[in-house]
Image (cartoon, rainbow, N blue to C red; front, side, top):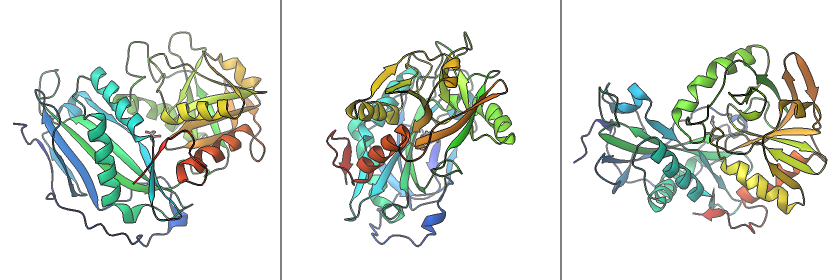
Length: 355
Ligand code: COI
């Protein structure tokens, strides 16, 4: 029996299934948490498998001060989006990929994880329960944030005795304050995001707080985010704090190969497939930082950022500007990806799931 060391303050409930879209200033939507109606929760003890979850009213959760996630960072998260189509149906984008990535990461972080079917079913339930928060077509998406955490208490350093899988949802617009306009990146050469043998290749919560200092310093100088280099040679591109990075030169699109220190992004993987389908050469390889100075374009890719054009990058005081806007490769890839995600372009890859 899983000890109830984490519980929603609110009672389990059945959702209202209210389909009328909430009255929000949809044009002002950014990337801030907007509380919605329901969240999904499922628990299991260390010796069990996840078996039964339920929707609770959205609200604060309680847990022991000794919870593994609070003391030792035993936690992971995922991110995926639901889009409202013109016909009112809602589309999810490759949710089974998030489920698989969470499973892989959970193994690295010594946690049990929901099965692929449980994960996808929980995501669907969460979206349907919060359907009135899915923005109108063209106004954004409902961002789903699945969490997996050691919620049981353990003072000694060991896996937590109880785990909680939770999904909350919030409507979002553009991630960067620039919206769809090009962002400015700073190459970070003091701090690193990940090391070989570490957890950079899984979506562990422990990968995120350590980037905040570099990010804060960059933001105070007017940059949107930081681009990290590898921690061994400090020579090769890794990823941006919040997303993967791509470099375009002529008809070739390159992105750092995922060898354990880089997050295997689902948007990254989808962009690679779309680019190949559009006739580009795609290379996954180590990219020396100097190549930034020869590139035609640089763009970021991630669930939150979708495909964001980079207008300029600064490295060791030297800046370089890139092609952006109509006719750019990043614009083409963005249009195709968002078209598929929102149901405006035929999904010949079979990536979307209608609910
Ligand atoms: C996402 O793109 O969904 C992420 O998890 C990145 C996060 C830093 C917003």
